[in-house]
Image 1: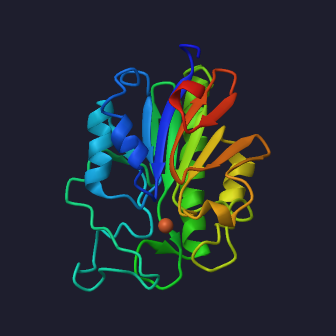
Image 2 (image 1 turned 135 degrees about the vertical axis):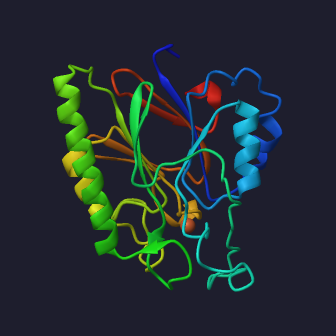
Length: 244
Ligand SMILES: [Fe+2]
């Protein structure tokens, strides 16, 4: 493992008993994870526990179940799929990546929250709404690139974090779990090195958990993944920190 790699712990959708047991014991990991990323649908307390164990700031997007506005808790204790709806506390720890462009030392990251619209009870977007977010972010990136060129900054890798998948890659046929087609347009235009997503928490329903589309490696995080990105853009993904 080169010192120049970017090491990521990504979590999503399912609380991992493995991480809960191992992290407090694995002092070797402390200081070696550069980024802790949540792709959504996880409880505030669980995320805080991991961030504390690693002593690192959390970067996150909300999933469709992370209701944090407008609705009352009594009204939506479970959604129409019978899945609990979470209400992150005020002051949810870390940085919300949604629609932002964050410079994190050796990389730049952006994020897109929520899922496709399916019943309106949660963080859900129609394709048109997500397209609008995607376009705004592309504009920001292009502006940043122009500024970067002027400042002669070294080209640094670009990562994307979403809750929903990219349409046609790791997604399912139903309205809730279908991916956004505008995410593909984003990849075509920006060519990020890495795209992490959640939402597809039944991995047996899809053929691959890791796919490459053009120059972008797309990972269905589902529970947790350790990911390492080398300086040359080589990506390793594993459930074991030692293997990345
Ligand atoms: Fe979800």
